[in-house]
Image (cartoon, rainbow, N blue to C red; front, side, top):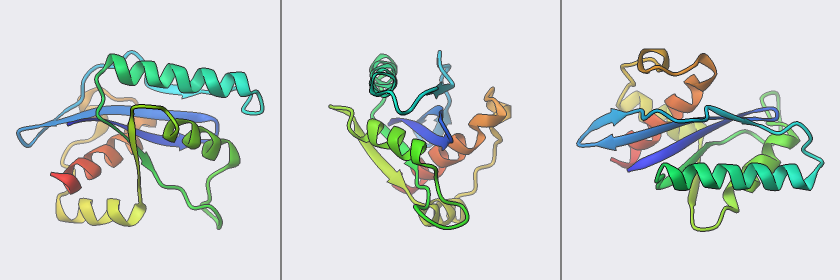
Length: 142
């Protein structure tokens, strides 16, 4: 199964492609590491973000989009722009998406710790959270 793990930071969607084959993780090279929307009030930019993301998923034959859950209120709540971007991804036709909760992530990592760091597989530091989400999700469904 090949997934695209997504971690939102303000107006950016940091992504990491991860594949689980025969119990081993593979992080394939990807032409894009993050998407940035400069003006989230512009419907055209949101549409373009959604279309670009869908094209990437199609090109890399991704089976599922895994999005890290962000709280809606409280000290660590997500921003309005990130929720707009999340909705755009959830509404992409013909792609399955799932919100992976912090509780599920912690439980998965507790049961099967991730033994490698993102930088060890060639990822940038801003992709580290997406990498951890993807590994935890794949461990939880394997």
